[in-house]
Image 1 (spheres, rainbow, N blue to C red):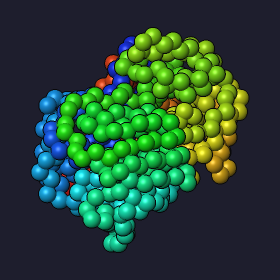
Image 2: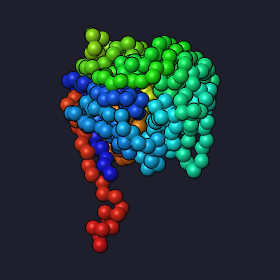
Image 3: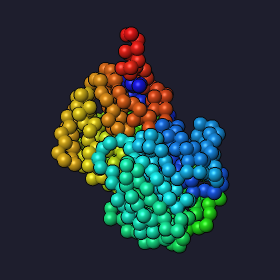
Image 4: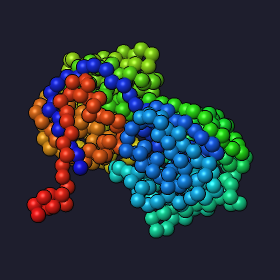
Length: 431
């Protein structure tokens, strides 16, 4: 197990290039199972969630050929299984996308209940609602979800989601791509990675319209034939570096972004006194003066993203005055607050609202990362804090950030990785 050791209090300067979007990659990679041919996917982020998905696809019989650090070829013509193994699937929430992909391609799927970060109940009832509307049976037994289409092929249907769900929208879209007839998803999620998934499928021969709106229309086709596609830049990674500059100060040029995707984050940071300039696919961010208080409420896109809530709360902990952060997407996404308090933050949580009283400074201390975005928030806090901070459980952070240590070092951060032997190794060394 590794830890990050950060000596903070140093402003950040330089350039950072954003990787491909994690939330798009973990949908597009399983969607490659729908393709009866070879697809080349570019701008793939080098993160552990992606590596896990490659292993899951290989278990199913797909051929995965890594071409370089950010490009892969996937050949799903000879998949021989529709059952995803428990050991891999339980380690990543997005494993449930295998349900929609395998249902669409093979008419059946058995996938272990998803794992990943634990910050609230993750119901799959909207996924199941979509599958059953399209003629599939669904059962949950022994930790596995099993679903089968009548007569081996999904049927087009109208599906109204009771709540906006990114996962259900993407899963139903995949199940419908090869279905017989037309499918309409109403009250669909509108996130950029949903548009990216639709664009990927369309580039392979699907017929999907309306992605990015609340009504997506899919005309099922007989076959997807392959092609080349590049994943969009990661909105949340870019936002995390923006908050790092806001917290620690400095000036950084953030490259390979889609500024429109960043609007919901940029607006709040400007409100807090951070300077942001957009130019093509780059954003220049600087902060030298004091931070101002602000109120933030997470919402489905185009609102403020829940995946940026811990990072923005960390910046607000250094702002003058009292701020309110309201989490309206997940039930339990404030587990990082206790760790921030170790660094000197003043945050009180009341249900879904965090009351953040700004402090003049944070100070280094040992902390543990409870989940992916919380871990990123602790990195942001450590960069701004005086003294040294050790962050444990960094495997969560590496699920979603490519080479975060190298990228921060290039901006002048004092950050290093140390290896922490587990208890078994310690006992062996004692013996």
